[in-house]
Image (cartoon, rainbow, N blue to C red; front, top):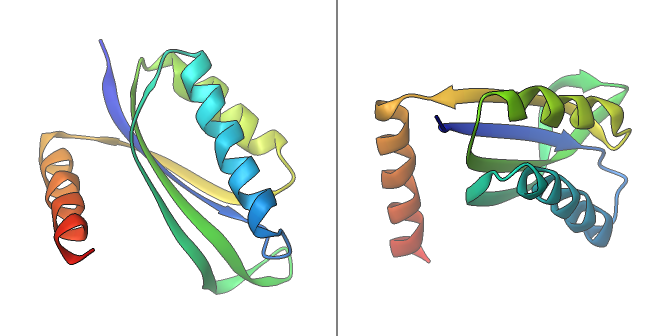
Length: 113
């Protein structure tokens, strides 16, 4: 049974735009290889952190929303931990209310664009 998940990860601020794009594509590829379906991706850009992480005060934020089997998450998070470009990450399973909210947020973003 597939579940819907949302992962937000923070990349080092010293990366170039190409390196950030390459890193995000790498993680999308990992999910695709595990037969996960990417539902949505948001690049939030360079943001100031609430507190320093690894002596850095900012980072590139990216959100990935995807549908996958539960066993895919362990492998995906292992790859996030192994990559030195990732400072922090969090993965949450979305319930039906969170999925509805995410859909409304996407529709709002489309209408504002």
